[in-house]
Image (tube, rainbow, N blue to C red):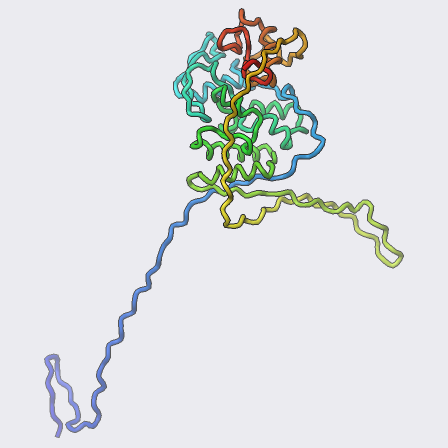
Length: 351
């Protein structure tokens, strides 16, 4: 006879005499959630520069081949004054009704952080100097391309207004020889230098690349400098021996264009820090006496505005200054202390 077990939810029947014991239920352990760590990858900028040795037998650099400052857009403001207008932190004033020449403004020299309100104390600097461009591949450019480079306003870091003293201490030096005294400007300076060389197809030296990489290491976000090197030229097939009697004639082919290949990543061993080049203290020199007519004038005294960075030597600047009227008519403001001597800090000058 069966026993009836009643449950609160209904009834079910079980045999009265069962020899099978129910198996106890062991709950399985809940699945452990897998923790997924998310790491934010730091942003990085990759810039590249072509490194190649400077060719031998370069023609001599002549600053007169690089026509500047010119009025490229014909609005009466030459390139120098265009830069002064663009970089002043306040609206500039002009010294003529046609608004051709800047009389006053406010500029912060990027190399030193010095604030200047008199444009006569400023030079407009080619970040990559004309002489460096000449040695880095521009020696073969046409006169028109050199003029475009010397007056280019397409990239804001190509030409900058800086204090005359800083510009003259820099001269034609690259970053392996000279760096801005204000270290906070190193990152921007190096990025501008690399960007200009890439834009104009100019190369860098090994030492230049090392210095640029060190300066870029302080950027935020970090900047990695990729060094590219021209591949070795293909062998010359012009003198290849003619095929033997049992060989088919060779099919002519063109020599492939050299391909720039990235240099392998540098080893993690830290590069020794390069001590920035300090600004040397000029050595006092005896005041030379320029001989009238001894220095060839490269510029028309009645031409556009000039500053001391347009001259390579003091004698050249002094001759131009005297030809343009000397202390009586110093419209180019080459004699800032009104002592009758122009651009005293240039090579060969009294300062």
